Length: 266
DNA sequence: CGGCCATCCTGCACGC
DNA sequence: TGCGTGCAGGATGGCC
Image (spheres, rainbow, N blue to C red):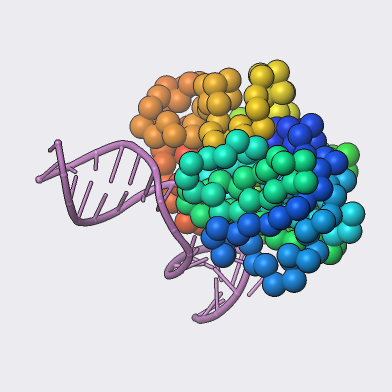
């Protein structure tokens, strides 16, 4: 499923392909994918000005207002007509189209007059300029929550998904059931560093690959091979060879090394 | 407030 | 081979 780096790659592709296009028609193939209420008039005959990313949301800004897209698990945006699972289509006056393809139908497209307001509940961007180690330490101290569900909470920190949280906690030596306010300063700094490097390395890896903008189905090549705990249940830890453990935490599959990652409770 | 649960969906891995 | 079952997951909202 698309994590933040995949969404960033999609956004960069869209900047090259749909900016400047004028929407001539909005076609909804799956009602829940786009609540149309007043959207039709707000969207048709509008021109795409910019494409931005906020966390895992894609913001397609129009003359006024914006289309906000979340790909969730299986969503893709592609200029090539996919034979199946098309939930929304934007047709352009140029004759081109943009297809929202989503096999599992979790993805959503929304029209909003004010995207910044719509997304104002989100926490800081992990790669943003304000997300310093000092700030992060304060954020962790201010909560008394299990670290894994906390990192997945988009109002706390925006853009991390299940896979990258498991990887970041492994790199920082923190057991996922640790309490946020009990994490030592050193581990908090490692976690901060791990979050940023995992995201940045993954973005860089995709940026160096030739990809069309329909990319985003899976973790591709480079980064897939770099996963150290996710999906490696019962396989030996790459550091200590102890079997990787998998538990359920906050409804999510959670992978960690019981010996390399310490459980901080107070 | 924090944690847990169900919900939405369908492809896919697995077992018989 | 083919079928049935269960799992996967991001975000939201309800409940205790």
